[in-house]
Length: 435
Image 1 (cartoon, rainbow, N blue to C red):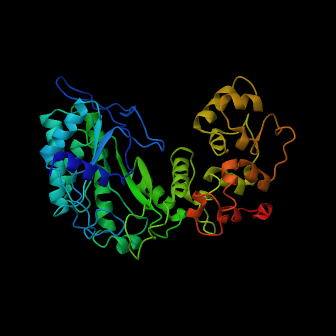
Image 2: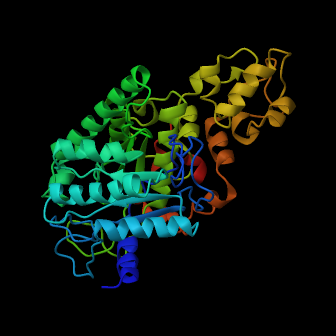
Image 3: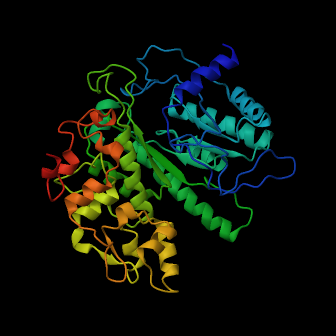
């Protein structure tokens, strides 16, 4: 098979893996070396949804001994198969780099023969790049669940970032759709990578030239919509992964029906992209705003409102905390106000040292008053003429585009089970205003 045909097949097979980011690590180029990484990121451009598009994103092979029901590369699926040799893939990466097509490599693989054999081929590829070509560009490599711990360690010594896809949010779903995989096989390399990163950080403090192990950390991916888990369960699992394994990111991938199976949603089901978006928003609140998963979703309302972002929904459910005085409120509480981001909260904290702030000043600072006005006081007063009710605030904060979805005619809303206003109905005041 021609190399170009292999590239077409294996690049297309890799498109469903979304765990792709800028570097976050520093790997300076030595004399005669190719490329370098900087913590600011390696990417010149991003796709519309924020994903990096300057890496060569490819599989080592799409041949796989596993038969995961949701995967396009599963053993029982009839599709063209291909495999790179380590030399072919290393040479291809360098050729693309020299033409300025890419600045790094994102390498994953199906399981060819066995996890150990697959991992050995990936290590050989990265060894050629790092040692023979002296390539110092960014490399993100997938760890292979079930591979020997020594192979995982060797892979981590060559890559900038590693990831182990947890794939599905529960042990039950994994057993149902991925009978060849186990939760233990997935979590074991996660723990090893975390240990290697910690040890590497300690060694670098003691020994200047100690080798780096996955300096950009590790991440994972979960498929959303292929199984019946609620948003609350998914978010709780994400929070646990951050705390237990020190992950940099948990990526969510809306399930795309690629083949028919009685255990999966039908082929005419559209990807739950809006649900994926809400989970990313909630993930941001966990990592940067001090929220807990249990705060954002309650047991009697375990899924996010498709029409309003998680932070606004939380605030409307907890009006007992609001409104707060912007000139005296602690920074941690400012972060919980809808329409106030991390930068805006820092600017407020700095500006109010010089004098009290009013709503005009907040607008100049960058606060989104369309949302924040319902939760803030300036000098003890609300926006003149504003009447604050939870139902009114909910209605006002939904964009006109979202309001057009209330009738069920919107494409995104059809991704969720009826009734369309499940999220709104769970709010304290109910949904009487809709009628």
